[in-house]
Amino acid sequence: MNTSLANSRPAEILLVEDNENDVILTCEAFRLSKLSVNLHHVNDGEECMAFLRKQGRHADAPTPDIILLDLKMPRMDGCEVLAAISSDETLRHLAVVILTTSAEEREIFRMYNLRCNSYIIKPVDFDQFSDTIRQIGMFWLLINQAPPAGAFVARKSRGV
Image (tube, rainbow, N blue to C red):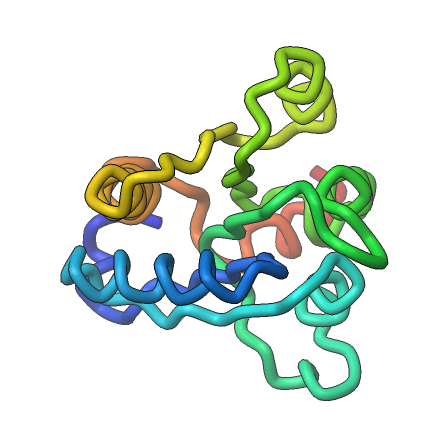
């Protein structure tokens, strides 16, 4: 998303997290960041994929500008979600930020192989966590230049 988009509408962020305390902390951290965001939350990977594919109760879900994805979840974990996003031509352009407690090198390497855009280890201190969320928002919503909405659909229909 570019700066003009950030000024024209709130960013759509999908938080995929099963830990209610982390959900509350993330909501509070975004509130403190003063960034204009609509934070959507799902509890597991299956619900994430339904949200992204606009299925069932998520039929009217917005396409997220950023997905904040935890790894350790029930039913469908973050690794499975990332693999599904990466293999789906209609979803693979989405920005996926892994936000997890795992600092295992093997896990980090695996997530980048599956095409995550960023891997961030959750700080345990709230002030550090809040600052991390603010920095994620600043980078992905204001500094990073993403393709315009719909660009991937248009390219596919033109055979590009």
